[in-house]
Length: 127
Image (cartoon, rainbow, N blue to C red):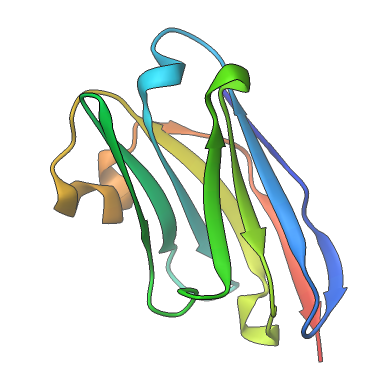
């Protein structure tokens, strides 16, 4: 089970931090992702922490690289998405997702490889 929070209304250039708390079996070993969806658009990949064995790697879409930072608190089974220098085009519903196993790199960018999803949290950036 995934519980996302932290969305809100912010002015362009501002910051927000999203949280996603995971619970359940293997939640501490899952690969986690953030996706977002704007009205009339398809859901798109934002960021992910891939866990493969004992190693982890973090990946970002080009549109958020350098502005967003995804992190994980293993003790709390929670992932965060720190969003800085927000732009109006970042306005969307943001969803966290999880997948277990040892995913190949290409799979973490695809929403259809994530069986577990949280509810969306709305981020609105005003110009």
